[in-house]
Length: 80
Image 1 (cartoon, rainbow, N blue to C red):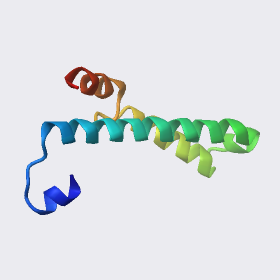
Image 2 (image 1 turned 90 degrees about the horizontal axis):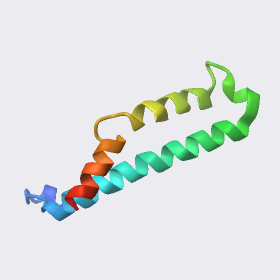
Image 3 (image 1 turned 180 degrees about the horizontal axis):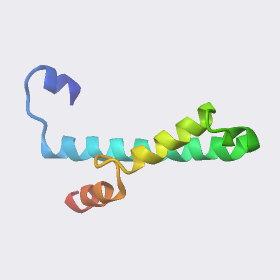
Image 4 (image 1 turned 45 degrees about the vertical axis):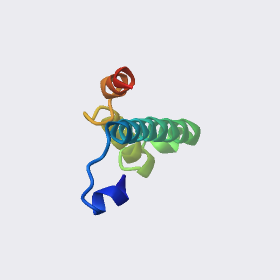
């Protein structure tokens, strides 16, 4: 898809759907990994200024972004 964009080619509907699905899946999986690391780290992760605390907040926010939320995932599945 990237190479096609460099050549000014329009992406096909299938490529756009697959790209969107890959992006949503990546966000969901990354958020799961951050939550698991946060849970495994114990009390040290609770510090407000801690790196894991920041990552957890970022991952939580990213999951709700319009391009990666559950509704986007469902819409992609319905179109597919």
